[in-house]
Image 1: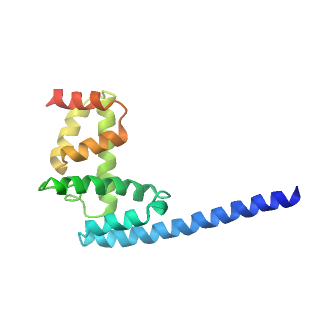
Image 2 (image 1 turned 60 degrees about the vertical axis):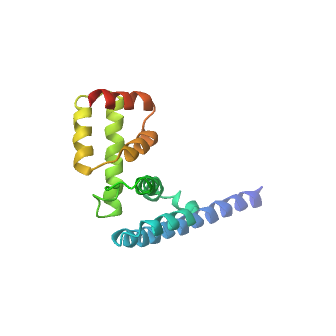
Image 3 (image 1 turned 90 degrees about the vertical axis):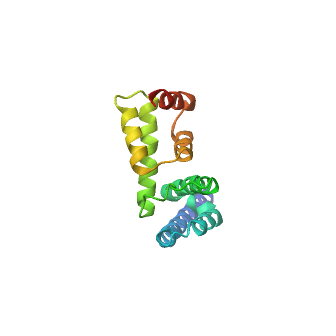
Amino acid sequence: MNQKLQDIRKSRWINERLKMQKCKKCIDLKLEIEILFQQKEYDQIRIILEDNCEEITLDNDLSLLYYIVDVYNTERYNQLEFTIFTMSKSIDEVIGLFTVLKFMLRRIEFNMPDALNEFYLFVIKNRISAFAIQKSAEFACINLELVFDRIKEGA
């Protein structure tokens, strides 16, 4: 019994060490991705995220960035002039932009006062594409149809 308990503790300790090493790798990945972002090497960011998909699950920002890069690729594929990255100067800014958009869509979903007006102003000011809105809604909202209907009605 004592040996079994020691084995469990050792296993937990090893798992914790592995997580810490992966988190260290996440910090390194963030630094590397930030440099690529500054250089506008967005395709390289996608490759790094895909190559390190196991590690990025341990980091909320990197996990979210994975979805944001998907939005960017859709925007680029559709040859949009402005992308989710256009108005952002850093990874933190683009994640913040996406996060604010998610909360605005949630406010629309819950029919909060002035939610639509704030949403429209935010979308115009930040040149948010329909693709970014759709992906954010899929990520953040429960009743997508309701949200999209309210956005259409308010227009």
